[in-house]
Image (tube, rainbow over all chains, first blue to last red; front, side, top):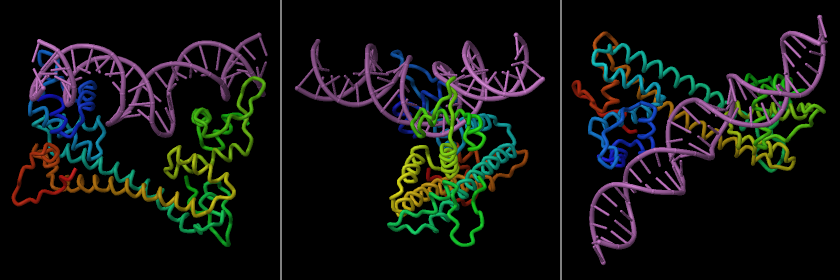
Length: 143
Length: 143
DNA sequence: TATGGTCCTTCCCATCATGGGAAGGTCAAG
DNA sequence: CTTGACCTTCCCATGATGGGAAGGACCATA
C-alpha cells in the first residue's frame, strides 16, 4: 500500500503521514526497491487511531501517550480513563474561555444600536472609554 | 515613555509591541536620540485597545479592522455590530466543536470501568475495534 | 518504445502569535 | 566608573498543517 492509498484509507494526508514518521509518532515503514513507502494494514490502523485521537482534540504528544497505552496490553483502564477525563477538563476550560468571550461580545453587541449612527459601545468598550449612558456598572473589564 | 513602561501599562509585552510595529498593526513611534522607542499616551491607548480585542478572541487581522473602524469617526455602528456578531458566531462554532469532542470523550469515559483491568472502551473506540458489549448503538463515530 | 499523466521522493517555506535568548548599546544610581 | 536594569536588532522555536519545486518511478496507451 502506497502512502497515497494509506492516506485515503486513514484520513491522514500523505504530508502528515511523513511528518508523523519524522517526529517518531509512527515508525518508518518498509520501502519498495525504488524508495516508496509501503504500509501494512496494521500501520493504516494506527493512522486511523491517530486521526481519531486528533479529531477528539488530543495534541500529537497526547496522541503519542494514547498510542503507548493502546499498545501496552497490560495497562489499567483507570489510566486511560484518567487521561481522557483530564483532556475533557482541558476542553471544558477552553470552552469556558470562549464562552466568556462570546458572552461579553454578545452583550456589547446587544447594547449597540446597529444603525447608521457612528456611536458604538463596542468600540467604546474596546477603547476603554466606556461612554457612560445612564447608570452603568463597570462590567466585563476583567481581562 | 519607554517600551517597557508602555508594555506594563498596556498589558502587551515589549516583544509583541515590536512585533505589532513590524507588521504594521501600529505605527512606528518616535525614537530618542539613542534609538529607544518613545510612546505617547495615545499610543498606549491603542495598545490597550489591541490587548482587549485580542482578549476577546479577535485575530490580529480582525483587530486591524477594528482599529480602522475605531479611527473612522464616520463609520456606522451597524458595521461594528455586524463585525462583532460575526465573531460571536465564529466563537460559537468553535465552542460547539469543542463541546462535541468533550461530549464524545465524556461518554466514552463513562463506559470505561476505570479499574485495574486493561479492557478499555476508550482505546477500543479510538482503534475502531468497538468491542460490542451487549446491544450498543454506534455512537460518536461521525468524525 | 515513446509519451504523458499520476504518483512518489526530499527539501524548503509559510502560516499564527508568542516567547527565548544572544550580542551589544544606554541610562540612572551608587 | 561600575553595576544592573533597560533598550536595540537578529535569529530560532513552538504546533500542526499545507504549498510547492525539482526530480524520479510507475503505468497505460498510442
